[in-house]
Amino acid sequence: AEATLVVSKAQPASTRAMLYVHGYNDYFFHDHLAGWANKEGFNFYALDMRKYGRSILPHQKPNMFRSVTEYFEELDKSIEMIRSNGNEQVALLGHSTGGLVSSVYLHHRKKGHVDALVLNSPYFENNAPYLANKLVLPVLSFIGKFKPDAYTGIKLKDGYTKSVSADYHGEWRFDLNLKPLKAFPLTFGWMRGLQAAQKQVHRGLDIKCPVLVLYSSKSVPPGAYNPHMHSADAVLNVKHIRKYAPNMGTDVKHKEIKDGMHDLALSKEPARSAYLKSVSAFLNDRL
Image (cartoon, rainbow, N blue to C red):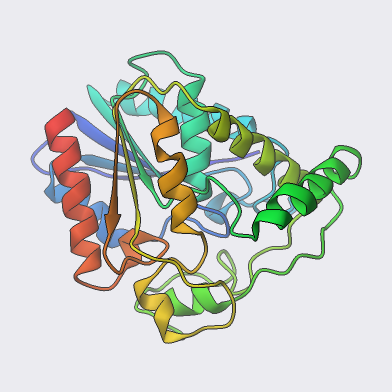
């Protein structure tokens, strides 16, 4: 497996760093985020995890995992490289599934491993009706024990991706081969790995560093594109994020961003600036 670390250094030189971890059906294309971080005095690093984005190899099923622990290797190596580059303070910034991965990862790492965690719309629970979460998803997870590489047949909708893509209704340019409109198909093994990670969150984590959880002020149902997706989370239910945010550890803040999109960094103004200001205030207070 391969993973890719993208780097943008601050000028003048800094000893503070930020490591960005993307979501599902995603990779790092957020140049404006790197520029913002550099202006804030952070060396910016972004990880395209194994089987994602620039890291996809020809024989791999894109975006697939059986356990979020698979990503711990590249997270460890990335943080080791960042520290060895003279960065004394490191903040981890995880979006959506990357927020779930980052949370479980830091639960398993000792105090001082990183200095702060920022979660941008973390994927703490599936955006499905209560009974589906309690009855259907456990069945899919069970099948994943025996047929991990089989596809579920679940098809993700293209509305959210169209709301951010400049080729459709959004303002951002990215490679639709690496972040396709309807996403890569899901395996039963992926569902099992996702559920296992979410269960850890639901039971409660013990993250040793300060945590900031950010999410939109409202959600809209996933599906075909509609204009409301520009001012709400069209992927996750923000009530779930708000519910589980306190489970991260003993030093947790959480805040809603009015009219934010699922990826708060891709929101329309003024939500985008509100998100970035919240991150900046938190990190400058804690680092």
